[in-house]
Length: 522
Image (cartoon, rainbow, N blue to C red):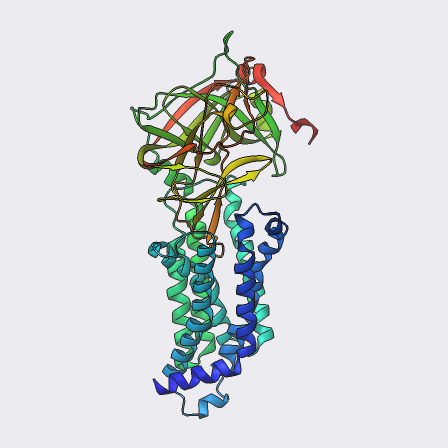
């Protein structure tokens, strides 16, 4: 232990400039973090700077890891420390202690300071803290340390690290190629298995290098671990469709009924919108669908969509992979929503043919209302909403609106609702006199995601504005001030089951209701 502390003190004295630079980068990260959730103009001007802060912190860690490990480099057999009475166990323990004190501990303190600045408690998130630090270790810190331990100088370490990033990006794109850009959401996210594998494999390579100084053996273990992690990631991606089929079973008692909208003299049907996609050669199609049959006290969320197009005249058939559509949450009653799908122009032309039909299958999650919290709002105050986060009323787009933030990912899926009395707090003569009810959804069913682990506080984005019916079959969302003493309800929903529901749409439906939003001009 005495030797471990001796090496630790020596490294701290020797590397104080690198430590100082790393701490300054973390301080800048903490100082500008409110730009993610604050609407203060001073912070908003620095939002682009904040996006660079993780890269700056990462760069300082690269420098610190390289200088730390290569001060007594285990790569080779002619180093000074080999002839010195240093045991490899003491050297390894001292380097680990240095990483804990000058990398992990400052990072934890910085993130706790960000939580405190946001009005959130740093405590009470033990499982999420553990997951965040595991992601940090498996994807950043341990790979940096093992790269430094298996290279002879800083330049080689940087080149190998850059090469690893390029290979990772290429492997990720290659793994997603079979899906042709169709991204789906699977409730059971397996990425933590990959992180655990990286931690165990890379830590083993690091111990092997210090214990035996067999550089190529340690490199083999590290590279093999990375390749195995890439294969597992590709496997999870390739089996995403089959896992969705397994998790979302076909049930005779579907939690929601779907139907094709039928136009009457008193109802307005939004058109099928066809617009350009950011993916080359693809277009987005937003299809109106009527949802009904959700039982009282429950709700349904649409997660993924799968479509199949059949043209019996030509014998043409095409089936898409499961695809993540825009989130739709359905409450009891009859509701109309837009389901977004993605097609090529050729596939869209088949839909417009006189004989084609499209079967749309939705993967839905059944939800049950759980805990309910209420907040009575007043301007310029912060309100802690249990299990959700911290909310406040701020002036945004000229109106007082409710903005919220949460710790370590999005909060659990929550329905936020309020009753507005706009005449009482608005001087606008066109403001309706009747009370208006506003309801919206915030949060996520996958609230504990730690992939974006550098940003520990996340803004919760939602629009709590009432819809005003103007008497012309149109609902208009207009800006109103959130009146003082308004009671806002936060109702969390829990998962109770998953299912698939289907709907068949004839081509005549698209021909009669389509609206072109620029896709023909692509």
